[in-house]
Image (tube, rainbow, N blue to C red):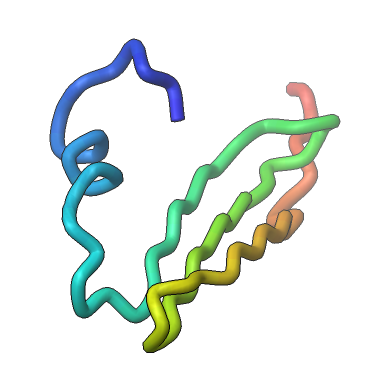
Length: 65
């Protein structure tokens, strides 16, 4: 995360994760002529460990003009 920003999103990342089952961070980006959805997820288990995944989903081609 870009540490130059402040606000509720920063607070959400720094919040206590007690009782949290899953967190997701979704970013929509223009990339290589496509509009894409980037998803980063963290799934927590009962032992306090977690498993991270990420995916990129192309949504639509961006055409000029």
